[in-house]
Image (tube, rainbow, N blue to C red; front, top):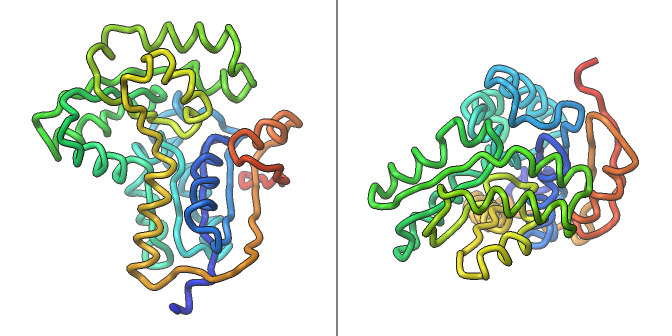
Length: 270
């Protein structure tokens, strides 16, 4: 086993949505130690400038590197779209970096039946054009329709899920003509798997809903296997940090991680 194998995996997001990715990693790689950081003080990233997103992402990356992480998983589409190169530069030779866009692009472009794909995400993710550019570069025969859905993250963070309010917002977005005749829909935000069933129901289960979390976890496993860095800890201890704290984050985190966790507050901007 590689001497770096017992080092933790760092995962970060603009909020608690990235816990969907952390949960998938825990399921696929049950022996790995996780250190999660949710930048809840600056949520959402989707309406921030590129420079601001890069600044937040680099600072969080530095913190996770200081914790000895062997891999940095950017569990935020907006950060992946706007700050990936800066994060890779910061990590340098200290840790590998896994984003949430490239593995999904690899997956959807490998499915020959997809002729038209939809992408929903924050304004920051959609306006970056990253998904559209990368998918068309890999397969110019695929048509990609993208739609910014900025109300979904605050809706989920505030607990408006599985109710009439959320159904109305979801229906308003998904009924836009941009998403007509798609065979697949990429959930371009790690918060969105929480409302995956509602999205499925809107499309009468006739559209493939692409949840990045399991794709990312499998991609990470392949990387660790190739580098002989799989951990064998039978009882890994995970740590979860947020930059700001409310009691509700503690409650909603169970929806994302499927078990009760303890969120600790760490302010990196003091």
